Length: 119
Image 1 (cartoon, helix red, strand yellow):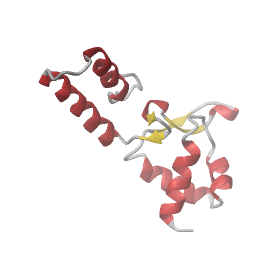
Image 2 (tube, rainbow, N blue to C red):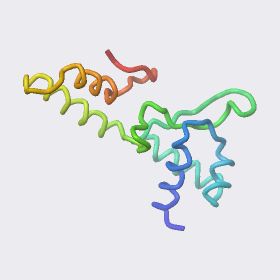
Image 3 (cartoon, one colour):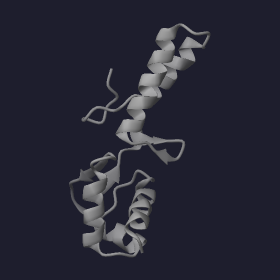
């Protein structure tokens, strides 16, 4: 299996927003645990994949649900561009429903490092 296929399969598996162990991901993607670990380390630079520490099923990695929009994963860069474009549209004073625009800005705003939407 190609590296890009493994990466895509890992992202697809994490789209449910649940916490998964590296072994669960490896079993699903049909590769080694070490391969999953390398891919996740690389993916963390672009996507909000977080570590969950705890006992039992609370331990593993998960994809922050705030980055999922209409079933697609949005990278930090994509969310930033969408948010900036919406804010520019809002400032332009064009004939757009401002309430709806404010709602979209809130929805696509980049979450801060604590996982909450920045204000």
